[in-house]
Image 1 (cartoon, rainbow, N blue to C red):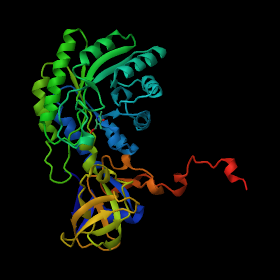
Image 2 (cartoon, helix red, strand yellow; image 1 turned 90 degrees about the vertical axis):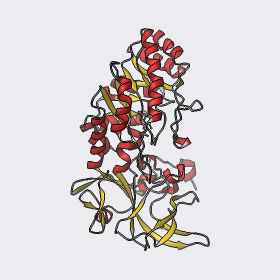
Image 3 (cartoon, helix red, strand yellow; image 1 turned 45 degrees about the vertical axis):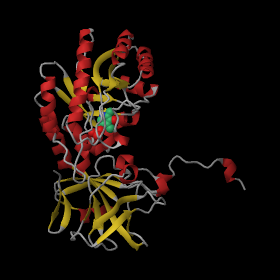
Image 4 (cartoon, rainbow, N blue to C red; image 1 turned 30 degrees about the horizontal axis):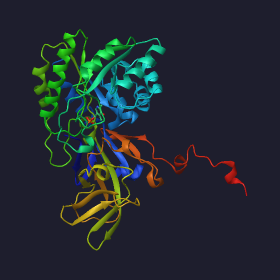
Length: 420
Ligand SMILES: *Cc1c(COP(=O)(O)O)cnc(C)c1O
């Protein structure tokens, strides 16, 4: 459920016409619905309310300060994967004791930053990382709270690029090696073991992979507890899928119902790291048709947004529904929707059935609130687009469109090139 609906033939975000946004802010721009974000967060929160839990929003899905702030106000924690995301989370007012830090390549500098602000837990992904964290924590005369990220080797049946819990994955520690690694962690004086973490992938549309992974993790938890290791947290990661096209992902309540019996009377706080399920359908990318072009084999709709603005179609072949902002019946044309970038991979949709479009028509690329702006770049020296947040009948520009000056910020021409 989201708040992007037609009213009298015009697509609205909540009470705001997307035509109006385009007129005032220009295109392309991302538009986020505050009510949808909050609704998705609350659905998750309510689903898991029966047992101790903490929701840590995956910042990489959408790291705009206004989005983070909206979730912080709901009580959300944050799941971060870099020092930059920690900076953003803190800037948005996140409580450091609700921040978990994942990622296979944390630097000592990032570790120090996170230790100084007092995050809840590092989700450690390798033995060398554990040793490095031990060194940094000892140097700061503190103890680093950790969970080890284990790789339960379950197939989330999603796109291979977003499967992270298989044996061949770069993420986590094999669950078979886990006991040995926990013994190692216990032997390190500046490491405090707090939990077990796993994250098996993204855009998962079934409950079974989560249940399988959790079962495997809980076997490990019991083993660790028998060894006297105090495990208070089980972090089951994120990954719950959303509807882009005709997927039928389970609602959070179904996931909660499936894992509840496994967690009963275990004295565990469950951590969840949802990203896509909170932000994905809370945002769209608003773009304008520049040209219609008839090719020999295919027709093209050239729009002003491109793969640098929304990478998912090019990167994963991902499907995003595309709706005309002014309602028109489907069936007028079949075309590729492409951007201005000089790459054949620059498309937002391929062989898509569309209404009969004209130059200047506005289009909404749906389900673009997660892994949209955060994956954007300046490729082809395209300034990054504006981001807008709508609440009720009002909207705010929550990130300005970049200017040409922003493109060259920090660049310098050495003196020798200026001579002559
Ligand atoms: C990307 C990621 C998430 C969020 O995944 P979604 O599919 O957006 O829910 C959560 N945890 C970790 C460790 C991640 O890398």
